[in-house]
Image (cartoon, rainbow, N blue to C red; front, side, top):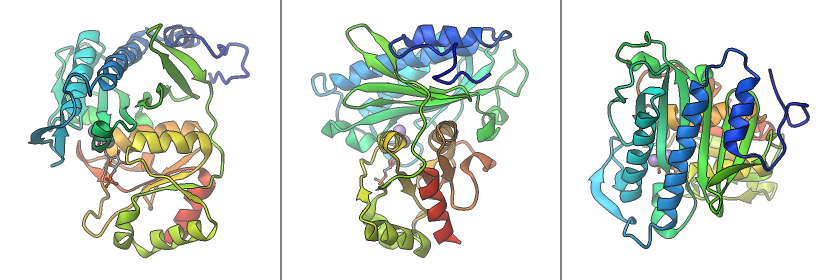
Length: 333
Ligand code: AHG
Ligand code: MN
Ligand code: MN
């Protein structure tokens, strides 16, 4: 059942996330509450990371670890801390039987083999912005496991495909902290009120504009993009669209979701698969985007139709207002 903002069962702006989750659960007579608990665990980890992010400069949490993660990218202290916090919250919560994270090469087994769900996370997105006080985020994706409950989870639990997600979302630690998620119906945003320690419904039933005038990509890579992408960007400039690129996917995505726009991370000459990770960046944002009326493509197919083959695989990503994404795709043909 879809409960949109105008539905009589819809809750008003201002209710807490906990109450909202509980209320939604009652709309599904057979729901047992495990997914609700898992979402609460993620929100709790988000609150902890909000706290760490906000005092990072004071307690020496900025800077690098001097090591690289599985992606060959330099790991920041907050990357590690966010990863630890999330994994701990999910392990303690008991609903997730396994996790994959950008920061760990292999599946993380939580030991809760009776848990029904697996979670894919980018614990801290936008690492290069940590030290300079610019918006960063967390991205998450939740699947119902396909291996039998009680057994050891396996790779197949994570390689199900984007349309099998049961919930997905992100937390943006920006000028305020906001959690946006969907369980496959509407997309809703909850702004964190630190004085109450609660996420409060602030953006119910998000519908993104069908068209926009913002384009977001790393302009420094432009000579490395395929001709079709370059042509599209030229057309954006001719129309005097606005260029906005934070370098934190979550931040760029969130802005474009609310205002209308397109985010592009195309293949480059060096990285023919692009840079972004399918399972914990592209899939969750694509799932959420579609619920809010946006499109997400890798240039050939809908992101959600990609059949995943490995945990950390990359994909090109074009995501945002449907008219803009379709126009871009017309340049690629
Ligand atoms: P992460 O910090 O999780 O590794 O992700 C960084 C991603 C994404 O957030 C951002 O849009 C993109 O990398 C920026 O890449 P460029 O610096 O190549 O533009
Ligand atoms: Mn990321
Ligand atoms: Mn990350």
